[in-house]
Amino acid sequence: MKKAVALLMCAVILTGLCSCAAPQEQTTNLTAMNTLMQIRVFSSLCDETEAVTLLENEIRRLEKLFDANAPESDASRINSCETECEISRDTAEIIKISKAAFEKTDGAFDITVMPVLRLWGFDNGNYGVPKEKALESALTLVGIDRITLDGTSVKKEKGTQISFGGVAKGYLGGRLLEIAKENGICGIVSLGGNIVLCGENEKKGYWSVGVKDPDNNSEIACSFECGGNLSVVTSGAYERYFEFEGKAYHHIIDPETGKPAESDLKSVTVIGKNGALCDAYSTSLFVMGKNKAVEFIKENNDFEYVLITTDNEIICSDGVKNPTSDLKINKLSDDAV
Ligand code: ADP
Ligand code: MG
Image (spheres, rainbow, N blue to C red):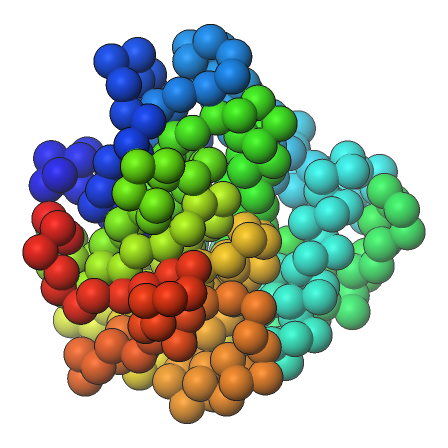
């Protein structure tokens, strides 16, 4: 398992094997959306190789739409158009979900933070600490109301730029679950930080998932067991950051300040059926920090969660704790690594 961890560098680690793991298991590693991904198909109504291809094709299809660095993508076309452009149904859907997430999270999740991300170099890896004046001016271009959707037509105010970085892999995970369901696929897809549990683990009755220790990538902080057909999404400051003059700057931005969120959370894992929302929530709960996140969770109970604080406290939802529900947690359980 440690080998798989090193290979995938994902924030959640699958710790159990599917019962349907059979000799015909098919595995493919690929790089997409700037991340190492892995598809494992244990069984399928169609041929297992064909099942891997179906999942891989969907990854490639959505990558082409959502990658803001690919010139022909919907994300790029939105960013480079003056005020209006036509987009695909998937892109319209991801914008719709992102807008809903903005409303729910009181603006902690905002895909229009792109002008700020660019200043820090989080869009292309040319990292640097921006000047306050530049940040102030970039912040005037941030705000979800600057972009409106009419079917598959996007209208935006001049200068508005979007990044699907906080929601794209989650949306993709949701689509993979749909494809897996349609084709009776049982397997696991790791999307670098996200895990998609396709189908049910018929033998064990649950999947075992480990949440990475934010301080040590090859260890897990806790593990839990959960039902199938779910997305497990983790966000953390440790995943992508740069250092300048002894200070670390990470990639999750507080849209109010335009700076890396000063969170007292080290990582946020969200588990649920709607991959895109799980992804948007994992990013925004991180921005909120522990107290606000706990408040948010009280009012929104359509997902399960594991929060790891900077004090190394592990806070998890009742669903994760309760062994009779879909999900249950065993801190540092024996089968974790
Ligand atoms: P990862 O990309 O590692 O899976 P997240 O899901 O937390 O992690 O997404 C972080 C990415 O989301 C950033 O790299 C950036 O592209 C984008 N982002 C950063 N801050 C925000 C924010 N407040 N709201 C929406 N997207 C954000
Ligand atoms: Mg996210």
